[in-house]
Length: 409
Image 1 (cartoon, one colour):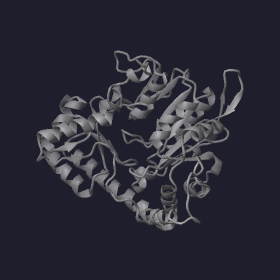
Image 2: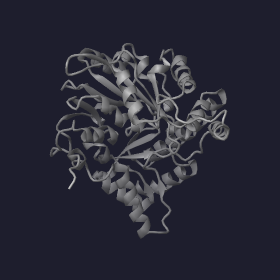
Image 3: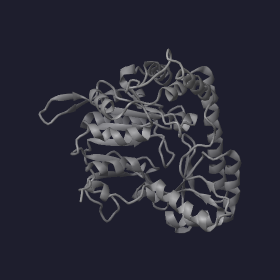
Image 4: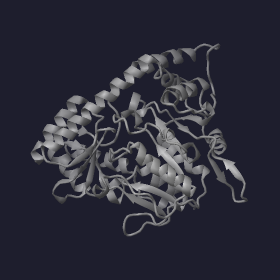
């Protein structure tokens, strides 16, 4: 029989959100008339921004004419989209990013998982805890994680607890990791780092030769002026950080799949023979080999988001979800459930009441309130006793969910 990659075998048999979906399916089969409000998996409900839809229609029409047909595109993304990104997401904030440092892809999830391809399997890894599962699972797949311990942690990964005791802001690592995963605004806790707090991480990485993998998928939700939208707003970050972004939660692209990664030219790694290597060049080589680029039609849709009308429509979508977040946050407070988030992020992170475990609260909320969320333990050991709700439902369903949860008071 064929040998398998044992690293996959060491993983839990199912991915967190696959398990949530499995349990919901089983519940629905047992209760076919149940009207379940789904606030677990972070899928969006607002339609795709109209300017993006119109751009896709035009781009699809382009494909019907020989003169405007597009087949294989550049693996790094079309230059016109990368220029729109460089101007719209960075230059307007005083950050200079060259288009050759931008890599358009099929989403931030893919890139945060795939970036490990260009890093040694010997790299020491640190993650905040709780953490988006992809960061940990893909390092298990690559063989960097070691073995699962009795604490529910992988032996070769340094976990940086984010708890009420430290206001969900992690302390700096102590084991001198080579690679540090940061997601801010944070999924799942909804917290954000101020400029001074993020500067501490950049300074640490520069002192210790670490690489920060900065997931900025939710930067559009930032409301506080002292929270940076990009890690490159921090001096020296170009020397130590790769940034990941997504159009999924801003313009409804969860089903279209488009995002991008920024790999500055200053970033260097070292080969076994001591040769200094450009990480930008390595990532280009990886993408050129394993990825044929996001489709022309989808990239035209993304480009349209940077027009004045596109920006207005994205802002309207963000405002809609943040109104939902406020409803959830205030509603939970009114029934005595401790919760945070929803200020700079579309996630609400609540403490499970009465000492219930995360999965026990999942079952209780589903059975008594017909509301589905995500157990905090699925994000790591420090997530036990917590629960995540998203603001991505409709406004009407968000109001209904709060009313359904009032009997929990």
